[in-house]
Image (cartoon, rainbow over all chains, first blue to last red; front, side):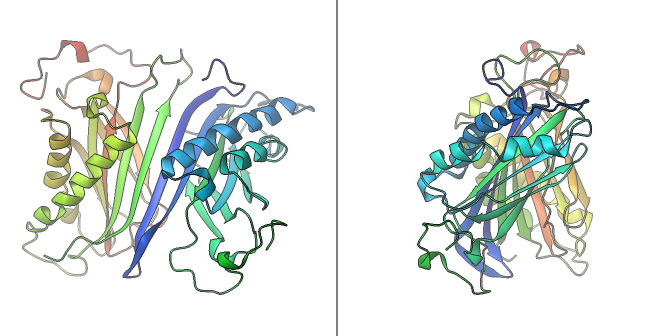
Length: 198
Length: 194
């Protein structure tokens, strides 16, 4: 994997969270979400690089790899995923724009290919940080961004990443919204899923 | 004792390709299972707590099975293990000690009678507290290549009246192990030490 791919991966980490009970109420079926995170070398670390196309291509590769890993960890078909999100943390010798290059131009297409659809914008966050930095991945419904029950976030962190010349890249998927969603708004049963918003 | 109420169940798998050195032919993996449970002993000093160990046994087995499943389903790939607990603010350290028996014996059972003591750590902490879980070889504690650890934690746990219980399994040595000592290939695996 590390030899053939564009991304030089040091580590891949998957997280699965299952909520079975909240405030004394059983959550049945439990809400589940998964994140896959790659720790990669930042080829642009330590200097200003004008052309970030290398990182853009790495983003495309990781979009497929991480989404597949996360879906497998969740144990459901990609088409059953309800919400998604992405995020990146750049080590101290990198630039916020490096995270943008990975996340925005090309990462989304392979995510949507793995999930079958994905009309909505993939919510994202990015930051620069040191080892063990907490990365909050925003989550939103994959076909209709206004579904209020699915506005959520998932924190991931890896104690030994990102090193100064590394980037942490994360994709998260879920089978559900928040455990006890009850603040109204557009419901998932009501969406058209055409314009990505409603 | 009341039933064990699990609020959240989390699994984490790390696959380590390298750490600046040559890429591993078979990347070692570490897996952690975390269960966030209600602490029925929180809030006051309870003298007799040992009965809760029996109540935790099914959860220990569920977590050990989840770890093997997360590592591909074959328990023979597991070479190292460890366990730990973070007790929320309304509990005491001794509540974390209740995890030694059900957590340790669950992994030994699932791994077919592993010989070595299960290394452990525990502490009292708030939501987001991190715990470094020590890891040693499952059949011989002195295997130096398998001394390792895995940091675990969850932003929202443990609440004051909760306990975060953790089990960890690994599939091999540190990725670039090279400081000598007893090798996994040299162990007798009888006394749990060598």
